[in-house]
Length: 150
Image (cartoon, rainbow, N blue to C red; front, side, top):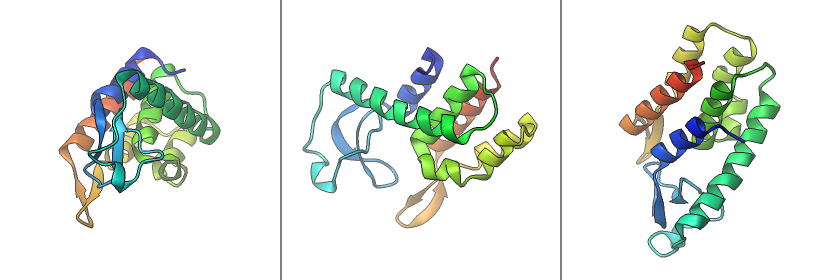
């Protein structure tokens, strides 16, 4: 289970929306960033309660914790693990598995190299074009700050 700082980070950046919507990357989303099982037809129509949003978050986080635990081959602190789960929650397991960031982490690279790699993941496709998004930039900065916190 993630520590409170990590869960709070995910919640703060995902926000809570009880009606399905399209995120900036044009993906149907609900609750605290859940995309599982949603279709475009759900946007603006499907609603959930806050309790359901929390349940979905817990389920999603468990999935991403498992991915991080399987892919990372070095010992992480609670905050490092939580920051990486937040990153993976936002970007997906496949992105982590194929990322240079994972290579740096598993190679026990210095913090500066990990931070540089981490902060590059601040872009999303908007109308087909990969663009930096201010919200993703803030999220990556918050995640790396948590990563560096003892």
